[in-house]
Length: 477
Image (cartoon, helix red, strand yellow):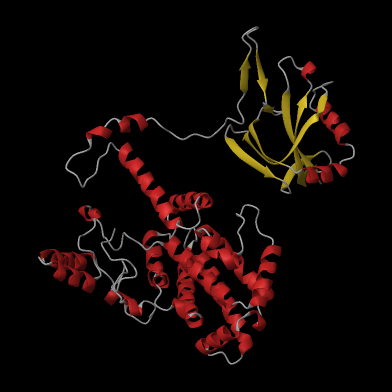
């Protein structure tokens, strides 16, 4: 978008014209080497005036620019100021490289200790489960890297010692850092992760003040110093060079959060889900085919219009109208009433309808049945379960409604929609072992742990329209 070559080019930074061999040299005059819109305009004019291809390539290499300006240059904009660095990908790239280098440091003892600590470390339930960090870290999504960066300093602090690292790697890091003793090497590795975590927090802050701008600049400088000092692979790394410009981007836009990251991460998640269906050999080729297919469908839905051709393809002009009325909606098939019609007596009855005893709760959805072992263990602690359930029916004024006890099902997850007092609707999700606040008769408000979520039916003779199913959580105070 800025008309600049890629980061691995000799002058591939879209914000400045620093050479590739000086990317992590932070003693340079940024104002002097920065790219300016009017200067780049003159450089593009020089490139376009050349008639020979070799002369154009020479100027492109000299200025770090592409042969043609970006199509966005038709707009009134500052190509360098309004095209900031991709903070999300740069930060995730640094964390991914640091994880790879850290795993390569471990001895056999260190790998075993690391995996043990990783398995025992309590992580948030909402986080996706990650495989073996030693052997499968290359398959992590970028959000996985960010989550890992939050806890990595604590993981390393619990086990990392001199015997956890290879002797050859200890010698290299000791030489690079100038450490007086080898027992300082593990501390240097942990310090790298601490600085990366602090920088990540500062970069993705939702708001900035004068103090937070200063803290951001300090975190970026400290990270840029320690990473190349401990790991030589970070020297002249483009993702680390970006630290020079992030403070300016934050002051220009008031934030460093990329709003398009969610879409990119969603595409990455889709591709990651496709991998198990491939032959695990030509994964890149298979994903490229699928990616090209998606773009082909998009091209056809646009009516076959391609700016590279003088006119659209007449064979696809009607396809766009066919797809124009499509839209996405929430799948409510599991919550809506399933109706069966009897042609003989024209009666309609309801099946599999999950209802609530109160009107302000609707759209109940159940997921993932509990295993028989977990269910049996739970019922052992609920000796009076059936009698208490009958009492709860009486409390809800369902009178003599009997319960079909053999139709009770247990689940691990439930979601539903609740109507607030002000008329707004909120979606609530509950999971086993969640802590929740409940209204207690004696203490007004108290806390409880969800140990089970069950669905049960009211006997058909009590309701003429068939079985009515209800769902309730089982609590432990």
